[in-house]
Length: 238
Image (cartoon, one colour):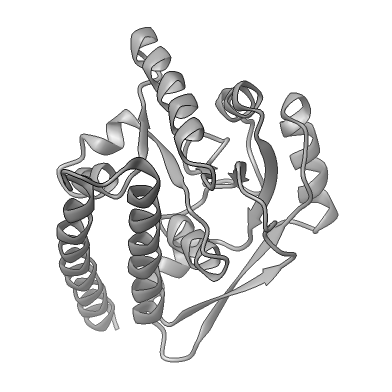
């Protein structure tokens, strides 16, 4: 049994590394394109991130069941709980159904990773260095500039700041509220259910495994954490 578990995870690792390298090459064509403007660049990178995510979920034999629906409008900050490596791929598969264009906010340290740093960089993620005041100023300027030039832009964030391994949700950092307020963005709360780190560890599955996602109504930037908590309670979050 342990032998089979080991072989399954080796196969999964090889698949994801090969697929990741393939998509880094795809992302680079857009990222370094000498003539492409900001809007079509983000649209193309969003589409390819979605394609990557759908390939991974298909390989792992995972499907996503959505409760609620994404707004048709853009200029939205999606506030999402964070438990596993799967979270981005789960959400990208949902965004793909509405052809959403957007970018993930990611910490500086993720871009410095030898394994997936280039994936984050070339796929259009926006880095933020929480320990550097000058870097924070540059980050907020980039966000504002992006929304001026890209009218169908959205942002995707984990307000908890990092993966939470406990039950339910943990306290939010202030970044999501500040970004939404500064750029007059609507905030939509999203909750991904289940212990998805364990689900990822045990994948791929012989039979389809379902992950459920709840999409809430718009909340205010000033009361994001309080309203998100109420949303979480209302769906019987686990």
